[in-house]
Image 1 (cartoon, rainbow, N blue to C red):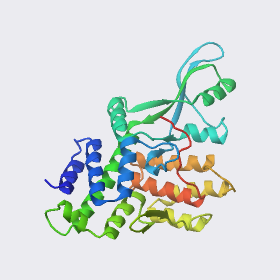
Image 2 (cartoon, rainbow, N blue to C red):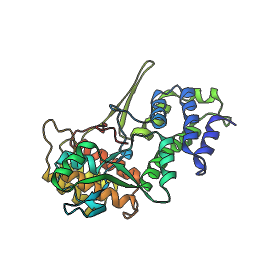
Image 3 (cartoon, rainbow, N blue to C red):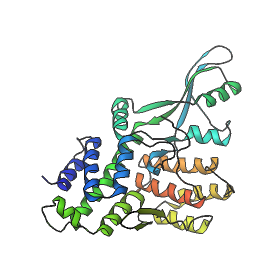
Image 4 (cartoon, rainbow, N blue to C red):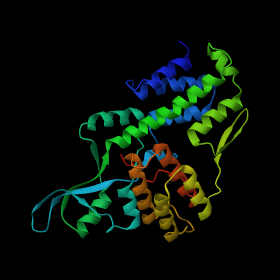
Length: 311
């Protein structure tokens, strides 16, 4: 069976692990000679490291936090949920957000291990634990709790991106045989457009030549509140949810040298994305979350760069 059809069949079969299809996708990237697809597949297989650009679908900002220990009367406290409002803004961002840097194999393992419980915990960094100890109670453990459906959504997002690429390549392959020679006969500009649009989004501009391929994401949103409002409407965000984000943005204006979202904006995004993930906003999916976060980050001229290796 030819590579494209074989990969297509593996991607549409929900019973097959995505990690298996990714290895075949790497072979496709090599056959096409496309470095963007190879880089994407390698990152999804091996995981993202500090300095890599982390895709929005791997950033979850709806973490709930719990502590376990004893109070000042030495009474046991078993996994009590706490508010993050007592912490500085940077700590609120760290504890309210989880960066899924893991490779797909590890994510599949986590999803399987915690599927029955429906939730898994990520231990707090030591500096956050020490801050809480000085303010509240002698805690033994503290962790962010995350629903396992978040992991499953990440896996399905990667699967959907690859499947769309494969289907579009099948549509432009000149012959039904889809041989290696057929793949190489597809114009490089067509291949680049298909892959870039599905990995980075349709607003990406790609400059390509015989020796390089550079991707630039256009940004006409920087500091433009009206453009951001229009973008949220274009994404399909209901007006009440868009207003929640826009109100937070108005209160936290872009600052020179800003490196992260402010706590109010991060909280507003967390509220809206949590509703989308729970299928409580009609017509929106995790892909919509990706577009939403992209828009807000573009407004503040921020990039999705890994700040902490949280695992």
